Amino acid sequence: MRNSIKMAILVVIAAGCCAIYLFHDLNGSFDYALPRRAVKVIAMVITGFTIAYATVVFQTITHNRILTPSIMGLDSLYLLLQTLIIFFLGSGHMIAVNKQVNFLVSVAVMIVFALLLYRFLFKKGDQSIYFLLLVGIIIGTFFSSISTFFQVLIDPNEFQIVQDRMFASFNNINSDLVWLSLIIVGVVMIYAWRFVKYLDVLSLGRETAINLGVPYDSIVKKMLIIVAVFISISTALVGPITFFGLIVANLSYQFFKSYKHRILISGAIVMSIIALVGGQWVVERVFTFSTTLSVIINFIGGVYFIYLLLKERNAG
Amino acid sequence: MIQVVSLSKFYGKKAVVEDVSVTIQPRKITSFIGPNGAGKSTLLSMVSRLLDADTGEVLIDKSDAKKMKSNDFAKRVSILKQSNYMNVRLTIRELVSFGRFPYSKGRLTDEDERIVDQSLEYMHLTDMQERYLDELSGGQRQRAFIAMVIAQDTEYILLDEPLNNLDMKHSVQIMKILRRLVDELGKTVVIVLHDINFASVYSDWIVAMKDGKVVKNGPTEEIIQSESLKEIYDMDIPIQKMEGCRICVYFNS
Ligand SMILES: Nc1ncnc2c1ncn2[C@@H]1O[C@H](COP(=O)(O)OP(=O)(O)OP(=O)(O)O)[C@@H](O)[C@H]1O
Ligand SMILES: [Mg+2]
Image 1 (cartoon, rainbow over the protein chains, first blue to last red):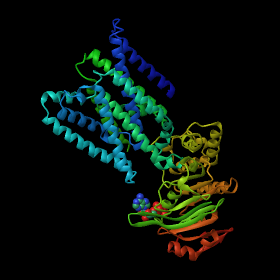
Image 2 (cartoon, rainbow over the protein chains, first blue to last red):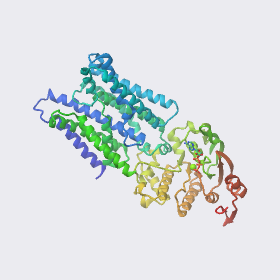
Image 3 (cartoon, helix red, strand yellow):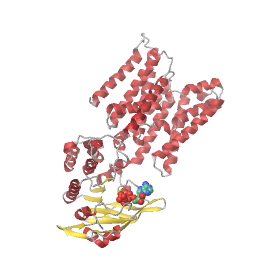
């Protein structure tokens, strides 16, 4: 099957999922239910887009197909931030209650953290991305430990609020945030688009890429910043969901068997839209909200991850 | 002309390449020879900007290589490394097409396709162009990588042990192709060789390195002499003249 046909089929399925989600059982509620559902669908599309894009790019830069950008420690920073806000300011504080403010604060803190991390590491002249990842893991673990420490001390009622933010959820999405995210992602994509052509060459390895005229180190730095921005946005919008990216990126590699990033990234994006919108519909209609999408994602993702590890081991 | 001016590279305190200055003449094949660990690959990596030098500079036609834009540099200097691992699955043709990236940024024109065809033809790969690299023998893969460098169509071509994995027939074939690139198309080839007989028969100029320094630098006839080779390799190597070629008989020395 040609890749364009595969892509067309996926796009049709994704569009179908969105249509079912929007219109199934609508009962003529065009004014009330439809706009609410539309906001959720857009939120899921943004999440799917950012996570898929960020994961494929991240894996290309690191030449590793079982890493997720979460090892840079952004997810754990987000959770730490939420925990600290509730612990020190209380769940009634403006930053905890007002979603716009919380969103902006979270995104800002995560991006600043990523920039500081890169700045610190790249300034020392050590260009090795693996060193960056190692530091990311250590800092991430450090953040998680502090979060756990404070979570134990938090008042149990307040802890409930922190716990809600520990898992990605599409159930209470703020529509203003969705529009805001859409704008940020749009602007970043306009900037990022010119680098897509380099990704195919980057995947051939550092030396081949430099030989072919790619300003390797500067492109890698820029790509890492774009990854950090996207991860920050999706995390602040719906919660930590980077594990999901691992699944869709690998499904896309397996399904398309191509080295072309235009195809791989588009494929991963469309697949994540199918999984999120379709999955959310199943959660709402079949399980009638008795479980959450992130539980299902983590379950299926976990199984798939083990499969990938076994496959890599057999291959190598 | 490539001018290397007092280039050094240190790992820790150890100088792997130490204050090396050489000039690569245009439209010639210059061979780098020398024992393992002499610093040949390191020098080539610095000239081709894969590795930052600690001191010194590289001038490409009198302009500082460091100041050139990556893409312009890639249109003038290409390098093939000693080992080429790739974790992407590509066919030979796809790999060779990447050689055109500096020109077309991934969107191949008809002209690019023509050059890719020609490079495949040069390397006798036309019949197997749709095969995947991971299904090839080491020598076939090596030829595919050389074809990519040829497709890159640069004035300066640096090759680090390109005869690795190749049988006699293909080694000779590749050296002849390099000779044609120089004599017919006016390219400049810099090549690292371990078989000094290939260096002797095909190159115009030889640079010998040892312990990070250049120990000999001169026209081929001058370097392929028992005394010079003794200095480079610490071996007594008799030299025989056969059919106009100087052959080093090092097998039992
Ligand atoms: N990344 C590195 N870190 C530390 N030492 C290195 C590194 N790369 C190379 N070296 C050392 O530098 C020296 C020169 O290496 P280089 O690869 O340039 O030698 P070479 O002349 O190409 O040898 P060969 O003929 O075996 O390919 C060696 O002693 C090697 O151990
Ligand atoms: Mg070497």
